[in-house]
Image (cartoon, rainbow, N blue to C red):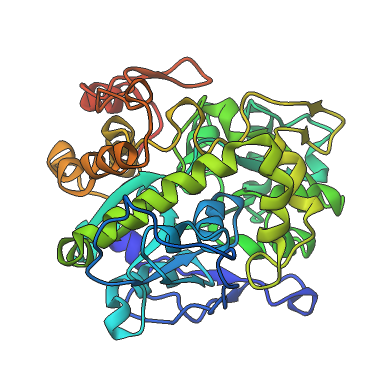
Length: 439
């Protein structure tokens, strides 16, 4: 859509940017910018290919990631030797500067200097398939929960929290003064954009009329809040925790409160790569699933955060990652939670399983906000992109008990924090029932 393609991607160059947001060089859908190489450490010592490893067509794959805690399964699969264990001994895990860069590198593929697959916002494989005409496969969900909507300290007085209604008067006043409130999101049509839009609309705030939504790369969110170029943002960890630790703002909510155990990032690859390398794809999936199981265990959280905090990955203090990874939430406004059930999950409660019903919601919301046309054949495209059958195959190969493998493509009717329900069998009815929308 024209709105999608004209979105400018912005970032802050640091304190010197003062109060201006600088246009990111990779803004255009037509531009192609390579990611930043993260030279991965050697896999864990004494790793040898196991007996049940597939006979891979290639040992090489280039996988992108953004500096977010939910990229941990790919990083851990590399660093702990899970990729090598299943025969993928030459996997590169490559840092991407932004989601548009991830998209552009997937479009050109590794043959053109890009990447074969990525840690990615769940709607993006669909947007790339539909808009950019580069067919993608969504192979696994990497996590559920674990994001937050954070706001500037100035909103503590009006207690902006799970309900966004308190923000409505401030947004109206700011608009009247021709200084509209700005909210940072990471990619138009992506998960963070959709969480921000849903939250605002639930409080009677039209995200396209009452505020300004600005795309900002995840690692630049805190810097933008610091210089005052955004008043709120939605992003994954560790950036919300870092905002709190620097006392620059607070988390109004964590997104699991918005929608319990909501789907978030995915592991996706180019369709042509998967079709050409089915066994290598199986090996990658086996490694990623095993890494997700490893990341889920509480006793591994400290090591996971230490590995991910390294300069070549997140380049942040491990202390900014660990507490929220454990489910210990300091919102920054006096509220705290310990062992919160809405913590980021990598494996528990079927977090890894790519339910088609969730992808139906993502496409429906993209239609709601005008990113996709109303006549998009939702179920047809979901069945084309979502490869839950490959997930099941990989899960069985690594010995996941039959009882832990979902038998349905749907998690059923979902209920949001405001009482709205989504029936994946009736997405049109859901759309019709929404008050604030573009469609």
